[in-house]
Image (cartoon, rainbow, N blue to C red):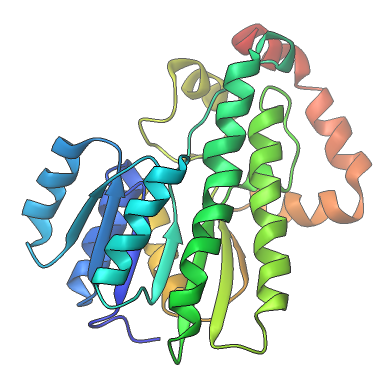
Length: 260
């Protein structure tokens, strides 16, 4: 799909990945609907990219937030591409994680993109061609100790994307799911940074991940995992989960030491 003059919604537009992605989309000629929760950051991004882009200050985990986004997309002529990027991270041992934190993770990472997509689908189905890109995580396919609820939220997004892609296969709307590995964004706490360093995990730049999401927005691919050997581990985990289980359990004491 050529993105020039297409209406593209980006949730989480002011995050590290979001800003880099929006710059690419704007340069490609897309008309953006920029969504995030902090108005000052959104206005600054709009000023950088151009006044032709719309700003929607809204929490898409709330019905009223989804109302505002839906209305903005409608006023722009109907959305052509939806990129569900907004997400949060709470790195904690499950036994130490509060109920409110668990609910919030699931609301933002899983429920919000599902319900927002449902709201916007009628607009997209009226288009000759439209695209949904859901941004997940490698942890949506590999259950990692210290991230149980986060893994669950991203696994939900992955399976939603897979099922919806099949359900919409006879329409002009295609669905893709992209799963980055560790990325250097403000979502990472000092403990997460320390854990990645201790485990020897490679951390990608926001610009690298944004470029991959941008590419997926313009094509019809259904699934992409970012990073090596992480993408290999996903495949091993699907076929021989015991191998990955044993490898991660060997690192459990280190995970507990840093996140406990």
